[in-house]
Length: 236
Image (cartoon, rainbow, N blue to C red; front, side, top):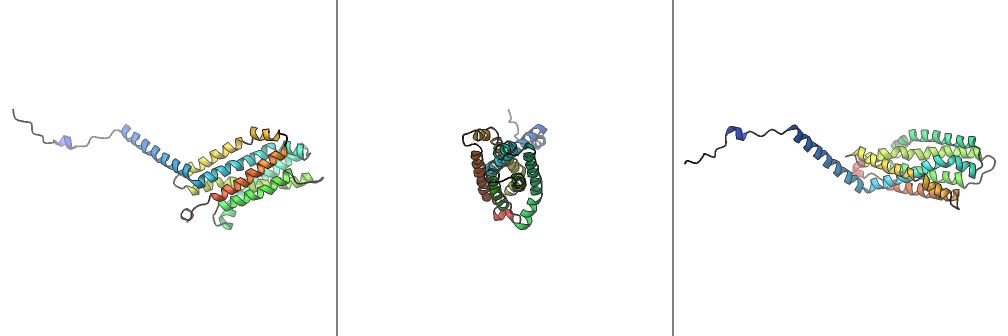
């Protein structure tokens, strides 16, 4: 019996069409692998980790002051509820102004560098906390504290506004992922301003202990923000 010739026919040479489902699976797999690679690089970035940790500590201070000021000012400074409310109003007003001008300060005074601005704003938060909790005051305490709260709002909202921008500049390959990661860590810090801070306030040291915690968080946040600098290649 003669052997069948092993020549390929024209139909054999034609490529088999790729189904739509296979194409979608391949695209989804490539997208996931790309996201996974970018996420790992973000988690391994020293600057991003410093930025996220600093933002968490900043959020502890911001939320702590905003949430506990009514009780703090009534207990510690003997202010009325109306005067304590006025302090919070000026805090929000100062934050509104600070949020608007911080970007311009960073662009024109610091040549586009975000990290130094965030560092110095945190350092200016420290004397505000000292004034709120420990500074001796007389009958004019209400007016002075109103001004202090306005300044605190100005300097505390500035770094808050720059966190997302700096995260995107530190990792432009996946800017939204980097920004979301920092914001997520910051929100975790905000939870520490609730029950944990209330436990500190109810301790035998009272508001003095709260002042120490907020002061340490403020200075630590500034130091961490100072480490979150862009490299020259990224800033160019």
